[in-house]
Image 1 (cartoon, helix red, strand yellow):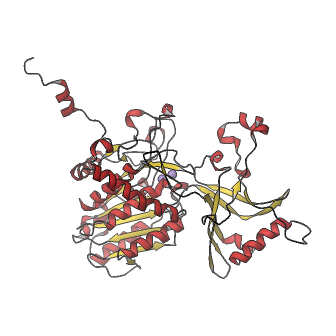
Image 2 (cartoon, rainbow, N blue to C red):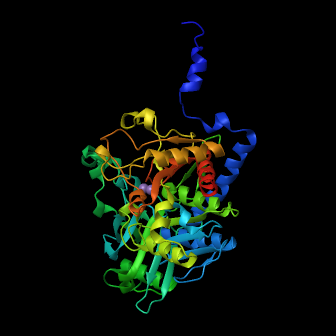
Image 3 (cartoon, protein in one colour):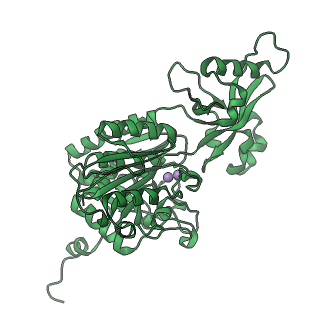
Length: 465
Ligand code: MN
Ligand code: MN
C-alpha cells in the first residue's frame, strides 16, 4: 500500500462532475454570453409563430448572402441557399469544399410553439361579450393561459388567395385579448378539481369585445367585432374558414433575476435552439463540410404534416443536393450527422420529486445532450449510439464548450419526444442537444443566458469539426 495516490488527486483524475459555466468562464466570456442574449431576445420578440420565425430567419439569412433554392438548381462550393417550405418550415444550407459523400452536418430544431389556436367558426356572442372559440395547440397546461394578456397572430387567406397578415396586441398602443377565469370567491368547486381538469378546453374562449354595433337588434357585439376586423383587415366571417390564427402571450422577452442571468419569454422551446443554430451557421463561413440548419414546424403535435419533420422533404433536399454535386444519395445519408436541437427539462428545486438529480440538466451547466428521450422503457426514442455520443463529446471538449448530459426526468414519471427519431430513421447519425428550460411550455418560460451561449458554441463546433 505504498505510494497511494492522494484521494483528491485520484478523484480529479477518475471522477466526472458537471462544469458550471460561471466557474469556468472569464469576465469576457460572461460578457459575450450576456451580449449574445440581446440578439436572441430581439429574435423572440419578432418571431412568435412559426410563420414569423421563418420570415425573420429568411431576413437574417439573406443578410448573410443566402439565396432562395429551387429543386434542380445548380449548386456551387461555398454557395449559401435557403428553401422556404410554405412559409412555416425553413432549410438553410451551405455547400462545403469537401466531397458531398462525406455527408451533411445538420442542426434541426423547431419553431412552432404551444399556443391557443382559433377555430374555423370562432365568433359568437353571449351575455354581453363576444368571444372566439379556440382549440389549443401542443402540450399546454390550460390553467396557465387564463387571465394573461394575449396577442392574436397569424394569417387569413381569402378565397381569391390573398394572404392577410394579422397581428393584434404587440404594439404598445394595441389592445390585447384575454381568457377569463373564475373569481376565488366562487371557485370552491373548481379549486377541488385536479389541475388538468379545472380549466376545460372549451372554456378557453378569447374575449374579443363588449360594445354593440349601433341600431342592431341581435348579436350587436358580434357584428361590431366583425365590423372592426373588416375595417382593419378587409376580412369577413367566412374568411375564418381559411385562416391560421393563434393567441400567444403579448409579453416581450425580459431579463429575469437581479443579476440578469436569465431570459424570460414566450417560445424558448424551441427558438432557443433555432436562433443559435443560425448564428453558428453564419459564423462558420470557412467550413469544409456541407452544413444545414432546419427550422421545423409541428414538432409540438408530433412532427406531422408537410411542414413537420416527418415529411419527406429532408430526403428530397438531400437527394437534390447530392445529385447537383455528383454524389451518392445513400452514402451522403450514411455519412451525415445531425444534432436534433430541442430543449431539455431543467432541474427545478421547487419540484425535486419529478427529477432524477444525477441525470437531469442543471441550470448554467451548459447545453444538454439527451442520449435518449421517449417514455418509460425508452419507448419511442432514438437512443443515440455510444459511438456518435463519443464523437460529439470530443468536438465539444476540443472546442472547450461547457455542456452536460441530461434526460427529461425520473424514469416512468412522464416523457416526451423530439424530431431526432424522424431524422435518424433516414440512416443519419442523430443525437439530441439543446438548452435546459424552466417552466417548459408555459406562456413565459425561463432559460439561462450562459446555457443559450453554449448552444451557439456547441453548434459552431459541430459545423467546424
Ligand atoms: Mn421542443
Ligand atoms: Mn415542446
